Length: 400
Image (cartoon, rainbow, N blue to C red; front, top):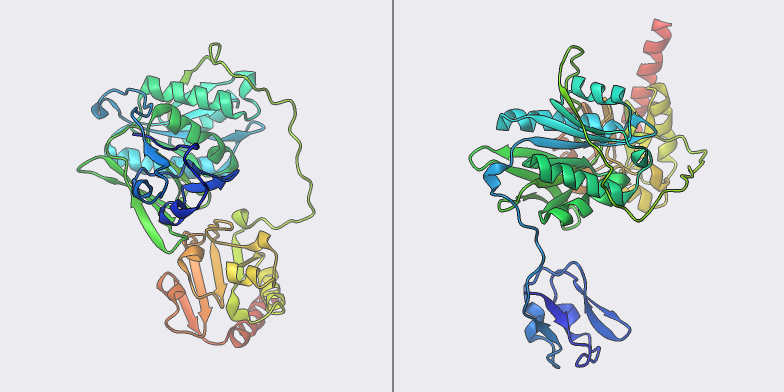
């Protein structure tokens, strides 16, 4: 039953705030207020000295759904901008194909506002079916019609799993879809797998500030929904001759109250693109100072790469935030990731653990970064990296 604050009784004493384990109580205009983080644990009911926090009769609105057994298949949301499929879509097709094969079901994709050519390309990247709508209203992203149409597709075709990218677009409207369907949503997942006995989706994501990795289930509702951070999953296999079905969706009866008038792009002279880099040389607190990044930059340039950093280095002010890799920065998946003076906190690891080759350089042999590194060098980075640089220059001189 819902928990509310009786404003006539509340005196704003703030006794209830410390009692809430979910930070769901705040003071607004001198009165306590329950926000959306409330988990209905009822701890606050006995704390208020005025008895102002009450549990009232009534039920939350959850749309009725068919039995769980009626849901089959994996659906990914194929994000596009300006008729170009976003890179995260191909990563979703990769993990979606694996999940669909584990469940022995079809993999489908929902594509709005792009061309039929792009829909055919998604089939070659692994989809069996495409729910395709090319109505002009979907050319530019708008939360309301996107949420309504995707909800309609899910209600009609009943996939048991729905996955989207944890991008600005995905984070904006996928929660609306979950709310409309009355199901759960796990955001910013770094791993997805199937419990074959129960067909439950095991959704892994960092929790409690990245200090633990939580595995979250949605056993009692369908679909099971998750968003996945870009560059965490690997792309699927491209098959030029793969065949599939395109199902055309009409949007004539999709009501919406808002309209996108124009989109303005931000212009910047910053060319750092960590998510597309093949080689990243990252520095952490072990550098000791900002000058250490000059050494890393020399190595990165020789390798045709770019510079990354841990949060510790950014917090020290040694390098700008745009270089930050990790839970609160960029998620990357380069061919080579060189971690210099980075201890390997969970928050950083979740942002780069999918790299093809990880090379760690650290003076501490017990540093957690070595647990995930393909190659580890225990030593002073100011001695090791100059050796790297000298050897690369020698090899390039010979090859030229």
